[in-house]
Structure formats: C-alpha cells, structure tokens
Length: 250
Image (cartoon, rainbow, N blue to C red):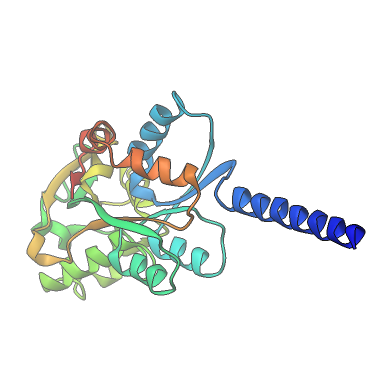
C-alpha cells in the first residue's frame, strides 16, 4: 500500500513539473517575429534600436505589402506582432481569431512624387503628361489600393491605365521614382520624407479621395516578451520616433 502511494506521488510530481514546463514555454520566447508594412521600415528600425539598448531579445522583421503579409499569416507563418497599413488586411487576420491585443496605431497621408527637379509632372492635374506612373499592386499593396481609390475619385484612373507600373510594395514605388525610371509615383508622405534629396512631393491627395490610411497593430502571441515590446511601441517616447518620420498618432 505504501509502495502504491509512493508511486502515485511520483506521478503527481512529474505531472506538475511537466505542466510548469508547458506554461513557461508558452509564455516566453527567444525571438519576436514581426510582420510590418514596408512604409514603417525606417521608423520601426529606429524604435527597435532604442528597445535593444535596454533589452536582450532577438527581433526579426518581415517588411512587405500588407496584403502579402496577411496571406503569409493566414497560411501559418509564425508571427508575433502584425502592423498593417490596411485595416481590411488586419481585419482578415483578426476574423480568424489570431489577434490577441490590438489598437489603431498610426495614420499617414497619400502624396504624388516625381524625380527631383522633373518638369514633366508638377501636380495631379499633370499626370496625363506622364509616360509611366508607379503605384503599388492594387490587390496586395495598400498604397496601391489607396492610389486607385484616389484616381477613381478624381475620375482619372481609367484615363491613366496604360501608364501604370505596378510594383510589390510602396518602397519599390519610391525607388522607381528616386532613380528616375518613371515620371511619377504615389506613396505615403512618410516614405517621401526618406528620399527628399532625390524626389519632390508635388501634390497631396485629399482625405476625401480615399479610405483613411490607418495602421492597426496587434499581437498574435501572449508571451511576456511580445507584450513588453507591444507596450514599448505605445510609450510616448517611442511614438515620438514615428511622429518624427511623419506619422500621425492615433
């Protein structure tokens, strides 16, 4: 009888240890994996540099068009934090029950840019003079979707259709324009500010021409490291970094 009791106690202790291990594993990670809209690259990189001054954690970032990032997440890509430039793409991830904590994080503006000192296009009204206009893919790149909405609102989308060069993300649009490979491009104001030596902002699209450019942020992991980084991104000192790059805080 005593022997049976001893064996039972051993099994209970082993089960308790096993449970503790599972809890510890599920609440702690060695690396935080982030999927973020390409337009966040400069600001988010600086924020991460600040975070790493006081924290010892690996942070892996995948930048891209929000639609492509959304598809990767829905297909099972391991992601701890998602920052989208599209509320629609974010909502599709949320609708699958993958988002734990979330908020509307940042806001941006849509602008028309041209190569520096170009005289071909000086405003939205001049776009008919352009030979090529770079915009993001309208199905997977939010900046491309917003560009289509704006052009459609202004009744010029179909008129310009044979001029579009569709690219994989908003940073690719910026590169095309900065290198003078196209006459104009549509990007976020924050992207334009990173290439001010090589491009000119020649016009801004009114907010009434497109869906509000809101960046939602959400966690897909309940680990303490992800929670700590999420909280850091919402601190006033961190938000000032994003403001410096031209984002408006929601």
